[in-house]
Image 1 (tube, rainbow over the protein chains, first blue to last red):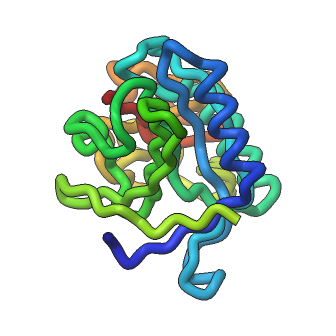
Image 2 (tube, rainbow over the protein chains, first blue to last red):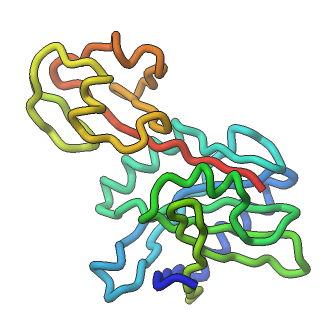
Length: 142
Length: 68
């Protein structure tokens, strides 16, 4: 477990979950925006989620649509939120970063959330990924 | 020449290419970055030959992807 703490509203969690279910059998993905830990007492607070398209349309891979990513980044800037990271779903595997997830994670400051639909109940976890290793973050759904 | 880079207006030398702007802006892991100029994405093979113009609006976007 890492020292990072992340807080997300239940309504935003449900938006991530609904996006994952409606994207099946493909993986879903999107961006997280909010206020960084420095401004919120050590807790990274997600203020907005952006469900975006997976251009790979695959059950095993995702790539966020760059055009939608650009629009989301501009929206964050307009409403004075910071990019905090991204999320994606694992339709058939647990909520942990795959080797590919780790290899393609370039930002050690970002939170990478993974929603697994593999079990009886969905499982959302958050990680930070640095130097080829993933560390689970403490995640609060409030 | 004035450019808007990641939402901030700044002054640069005239005739700057996308490749040179990437270096000046200290863009990390540039091989995983896509660049848009005035909302048009520039192919990575054209970074050297795409020259910025006055008031161009430039965004650097990190590739976001993975797999299970």
